[in-house]
Length: 311
Length: 310
Image (cartoon, rainbow over all chains, first blue to last red; front, side, top):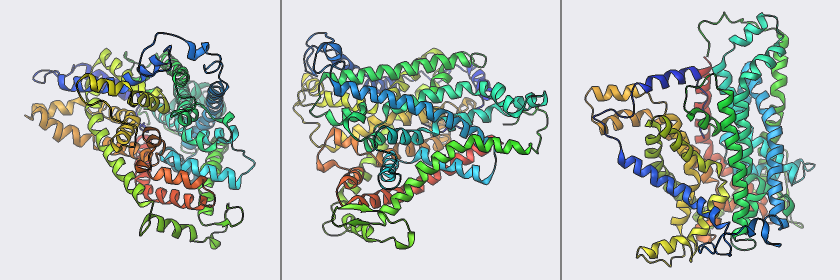
């Protein structure tokens, strides 16, 4: 995930136009069959195992290697060990969704406000705050999780381990997504339109709400999708800050059951359902981003794809 | 990024604007100070604190003047010298991370380069497939490999089908499995960083090199690689930093004491009665080592944003 801070859409469009004149290597450069083959092999290696895991969540038997016929018993059928009926699996999935929703709702407005405030309020303090924010982006998650664990167990003991601590930690860990993405967009938008609005009589707040915010919408939306997906994926912070089994989300449940316990196709079924949630968020993000930037784009979907992946 | 055709900027914004900007930044700033800066002070206070002998619980010391070096020296003896049981995991962390990063770069660069040079529809398809693992949770990707690598699993089955010995216990504490697991886990991020950069390399430079008589390979070595050095460095950090703090990949893919890393030691001591302070010291040591690349990354990012802000 790069922190891409400088990509004015206009420059990107210009670059793209220029490149159209040069289709992929003109002769004497041949089509790179070897590189294409290598890329295809990489994609097989990266995607096929996940496909197999999804496939075996529909297996009739308990095996992970022998296909015993199609069945949905690990989703709804089995009265004890399906995702629908097993309290542990059920609970973990709900907890993941609750954490993702709460974190997104808190994190995105705070991060957007932070980005706008830091960008406009140019001072030593805002510069320092920006550096702190980037540090929060690159620090290894384990170190932050350990520090947060010690904070809530030794100092701020009114924040209980469990959902409260998890959300507090996830917000600070994900705050950089909206902050970095919105800030990059602010830089590329510039201030001229906002100033035109104030010259025409809008208040500062009015210009912010009616001119700047609509232009920031694609970036805000992209960062919301990213925060949501990244919370679903999160493991380290939630593992350190969860308390009882009832506050353990899906990732922690998979980690602690993969070698026994609930291991088996039901675990695959739960993972598949969460995969669908992530893919739904990604698709929604892609379509909405394309729609929101329909006046700016030049055709292909690469920009929308990279934007919702945080580039 | 100032538009040259824009009207001249007003240099003196109205004073109450400043309060608006500060107000907007305040919630995020408070959140960062309370839940990012303060936790590390607590970590230092725990590391410099003591232990309640009776309950074996942590006693953090808040005043810097009273900090003791007891935990620090305890950890030091665990890391070096006779009976240092943390030396091996520390060394292993370095070798695993180095091997996994080198392998990731060797795989990621050609893939990112190929997709970045593609055109139009094919590019969108390839890019979507490259980004796909990014949307699959880390745990599910590990789960998929655990299923495949089991002794009676499909991977061994495929090996015996092509005539190779297929009874290997891949999950029984093998370094190669852990290293490949780390590669599998973190390579999507590296590819995205490299792609984002290579996509912006001006193809006119490559054409110029070619027009001036360089061969394909020489163009690649003399123009593309030097141009992409910042991306290689940034991408390396993006994968190295989480790998150094990883403790779950080796637990999932091996679980044996012979493949533990420094992250396992931190996590284990944190939960062990009476050793929380030593876990904090170990975490602070890792943080100190990582400070160099992190500061480099933060400084270069801040410089880049200042340049683009004009």
